[in-house]
Amino acid sequence: MEIRLLRSFVVLAEERHFGRAAARLLVAQPALSQQLKALEREVGARLLDRSTRRVDLTDAGRLLLQRAREVLTAADRAEADLALLVAGRAGRVRLGFVGTATYDVLPRVARRVREELPDLELELRGELLGPELLDALRAGDLDLAVLRPGPVLPDDLVVHELRREPLVAVLPAAHPAAGAASVALTDLAGETLVTHPSGARSTLQPRVLEACRAAGFDPAVLEVGETGTLVVFVAAGLGVGLVPASVRALRLDGVAYVPLAGDPVTVPLALAHRPDPSPAVARVAALVAGVAGVAP
Image (cartoon, rainbow, N blue to C red; front, side):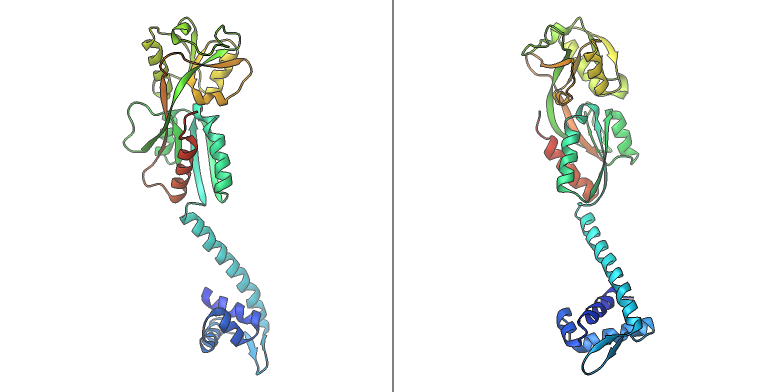
């Protein structure tokens, strides 16, 4: 049953007049009559009783009018939904965040998507490690990932650097340097360093240890799995940490974030996705780039 014929029938049933219905549909009256005949042949029943004065619906016509309105409403909704999907304004996007971006970028992206893309379903996953995010992209479990890239970029994924941000020291509130304007990295040489995991599980720990070695010391390390846990351990007095400046968005009693003295040690933040993203993924990627593209 053609949607075009149903639309013509509904207008004719509403107007109960061939001339007015034809004008509303922008078709000639004979063409409208032919459409009605074609629809009646298709359903096998007379839909209208037509006299010189008026047009009335038959029982079959009244039933079809109800069903036709339901069909047309569903068709219009599907057309609108598809238009949103093609424009990248609807669909589902799964977005993962490395732990050090979870507290700063994630909430801002979530707010912007709700405001600007209300018909899009955004699935957020935070406090993940960089290699874990890359594996999830490759497996199709994520569409986008905000992460700290390693020195060698993957050649099977698209990776865009969003910004570079300095490392800051996170210290227990009782630490002598907690209230200082800055702290020299060498002043932390005797401290236990609370860090993200070592080896292939984290891309941030090697950069942190490299900064310490460049300052002339090799720290004792206490490894934790998540950024939130790292800050909690520092608050408990178990050591100090070096984290990207955006982690300052994680406000916790018992800790102080203090800039490092001298030339800043910076780490990149990047956005990764598979090649040829869907319109929705591309639109969210552009929004993430706008939100996260400025260093804190």
